[in-house]
Each structure stands twice: as C-alpha cells, then as structure tokens.
Image 1 (cartoon, rainbow, N blue to C red):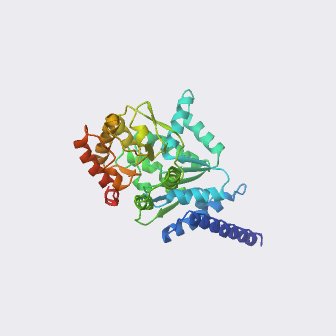
Image 2 (cartoon, rainbow, N blue to C red):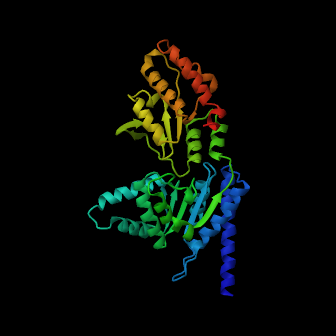
Image 3 (cartoon, helix red, strand yellow):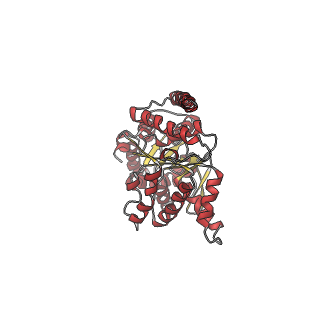
Amino acid sequence: MIKFIKLAFENMDYQLKLNQILDEFKKKDISLDSYQKDITEKILLLAIKIKDETPFKIFTKAEYGLYLHGSVGRGKTLITRTILDHVFKNYLYFHYADFLKHIRSELEDLKSDKNPLKKIVSNLHNTKRVIFIDEFQVEDIADAMILSDVIPSLIKKRSKIFLTSNFSINGLYPNGLQRDKFINSMSVLRDKLNYFQLKGDLDYRLRNIINQHSKESSMIEIQSFIESLFITDAKQNNEFYVNDRRFPCLSYGNEFLWLSYIDFFKVPVGYEDFKTIFDEYKWLFISEFQQLNDDNADLVRRFITFIDLAYIQKMNIKLFLKYEEIDNLYQGNLLKDLWVRTSSRLIEMSSANYLTTN
C-alpha cells in the first residue's frame, strides 16, 4: 500500500513538472518535435528518480545519471538544463571547457598533494551531488588521462552525473593516443548511466540563426536572441582575452563571441588574433555596424582581413546587418578595390546557403 501511494505521488509530481516544462517551452516559442518530446519525458522521469534519495537504498542504473548524445543543435542542453532547473534546486553546471579549467586550476593549487585528483573528486562530490557537464568531449591525451580518472571516481562515489555530448561514448576522443585505454575506462558511462540518443537531423540552432537573418534587431533583441541559442553559455562581459591581450566585446561564451564592429576593429588587432579567435569559438556575431570612410581606414582594413580569413576558414558568422547596407558600409577610396571583394563575401556569408553548406 505504501509503495502504491509513493508511486502515485511520483506520477503526480512527474505530470506536474512535465506540464510546467512544456509550458515554459511554449512561452519561449519552442516547439518540440517527437524525438525531443520523448527525450524530455525520459529525462524528467530519470531526474525525479534520482532526486528520491532514500538512505541505504540499493542504486540501480537509472539513479546514477545520464549520457545524452546527438547531433549539433538538437536541443540537448536546453532540454537537460530545463529539466534539472525544475527538479533540483541546486546542482553544479559546467561547460566541458570550464570543467577542465576547474580541474587544472585545482591541480595547480594541490600540486603538493600526493593524490590531488582524489581530493578534487571529493570536493566536487561534497559540493553538489548532482553535476551536469555540457558539450562533453575529449580533445587530447592530457584531458583523456584526467577524465578517465575523475569521471569514474565521481560515479563510484555515487555522484549523479548528467552528460550531454555530440559524440556517442564509443565516438569520444577520435584518433587519440591510447584511445582504447580511454574508451575502456569510459565503459563505466555505459554501465552505470542511462544512455540516450536524441535523434533527428535538423539543427535547430542553425535554423533559428538563418531565420533571424532577415530581421532588424535592437541590442536588447540581439542579446535575447543569442542567449536563447546558448542558454547556459553566455557570459555578460565587455572584454575577452586573445593571445594574452584584452579586447572589447559585447558578450561571449565557450562556443560564441559577440563583437561590436565599431569598438572591436578600432583597436590594434590583427591576423594572428583572428586565427586564435576562429580556433576558440564556433560562432561569431557582429553588430553595431556604422557607415565609415577613409578617416577610419585602419578599422575597415582590419575588418577586411577578418572577413577574408573567416571566409577562407568557413566560419559560422552572423552579421546583424541588412543586405542593402553592405555595399554602402564603406564610403572611402583608399580601400575601394579591396572592399568590392569584401562586400561580395559579406553578402554570401549573410545567406542561408553559406551557413547550411559549412
């Protein structure tokens, strides 16, 4: 009888939270497809089970956490973060890059310890029992060695781990050194965590950016738009670092950089800085365009170099600039011949075709 009542309350909690989550998506004008709806229901049920921590209970696979993988822009972060916000009052959130930065910083502070990783794991576990690591991936052998120790140790301590990734578990760390050893250590993810794939080929982030191309937006609307795309990632800051130098920006995150045309390109910035930016960010946004002449030739020249390199490297870039403004953006003579090519590239880079073929 007690078990029946408990299950009834769990079901009521599930239905209530599911309705709240779906209403939240609706208010944000987000329409879930059948795959996203199914994953939302599964993860919500899992999160509610994880929250129900009865002392001395025997843990099942369902209660250790989640590994959710799928193509870029499918909504993995949005769905998982929204559910965790509704089910748990407190949990640790890390973008993968921030997670590694945290561990490296702790390693530096604990370098005199005999087993610093063990202490780092304990500190993470004791801080919050639920940890969400977004955009999980592995890029080099140093990261692989750290993660093959930290992640299994957290799971062994029964921390509740939520991971989202563009890669399946077997697809992690492609072509890496000692990859077989790493994949073997990560088998704990498949053994202990619920393993879901968010199917579907439509990149919703890309679709939304393409749909936004024809719209004229205020700064507040642009900010809201970018934050809706990178829901957990936006850092409100007016500067960022490149090659150990500070530069002005409007906002940035682990995946994107939002620049002001008039503020960023007026400072001494060059080819090597642009290369570093393109290596570090997946998306670039540029706004606050102004019509300029030869009084600002240095600014325009920097912008031309930036666009040339971005075009060659097929960068994902969104210009908050109307098509009809592009040709008249530069009104000088010194760079007239160069601007013809840049203008053509700006028009191409503002098209849906450019973004969908990158």
